[in-house]
Length: 116
Image (cartoon, rainbow, N blue to C red; front, side, top):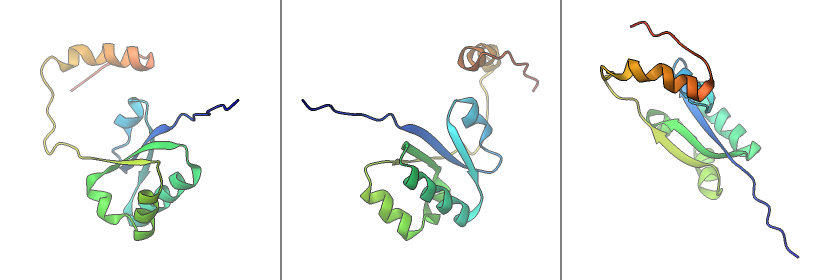
């Protein structure tokens, strides 16, 4: 008899300092880094731990990935590398405030008060 064992992988985000809060509120594990050294050290930790299924990084940090880490990411099945960008200009739809409190309460169980 053969048993297949599957392991649940996590979603992890690497962000610039000061941009991690929204990801944490969304439930993602986040590491805030600065500079090429910080990014590559975090990628090396992710590769060693083998628990991350998807690793999201800022698109503007992609060029900072060392050749060693690029090679390791290509050779391993996990993590899958996802790139994200922030919009150049942030704007909220007028009705967004009406639904934000309810969404946060459902997601994390806390009521919030928004002041803009």
